[in-house]
Length: 121
Image 1 (tube, rainbow, N blue to C red):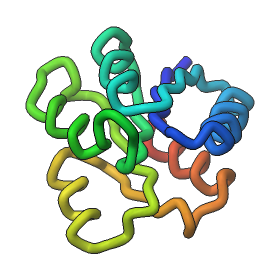
Image 2 (image 1 turned 135 degrees about the horizontal axis):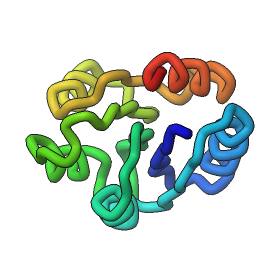
Image 3 (image 1 turned 135 degrees about the vertical axis):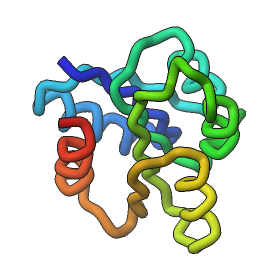
Image 4 (image 1 turned 90 degrees about the vertical axis):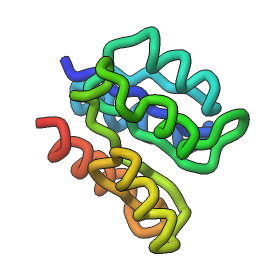
């Protein structure tokens, strides 16, 4: 079973994604802020990180900066799921190791789950 860490500070969205991903057979761990997300990432063994970029405590960008170049995370797939839609922000996330960048407002939860499935098959 593939294991996903979802770092999302909106409890409603986190619950929707966790429920959908569980029903698709994924194990999902949720962290509601950047600090908890980084701690869970360092302690766990995940196939995919689904990361909001605007978070309390540590931003998604700060998490990406902290794990970039770390051997432990070299096979970790990262999907940024954010409302940040400026070209520079998207490029910065990609430069920091994100494989896929989805703007929340443009995707339904079902579409996000489909993108996740494509990314970690």
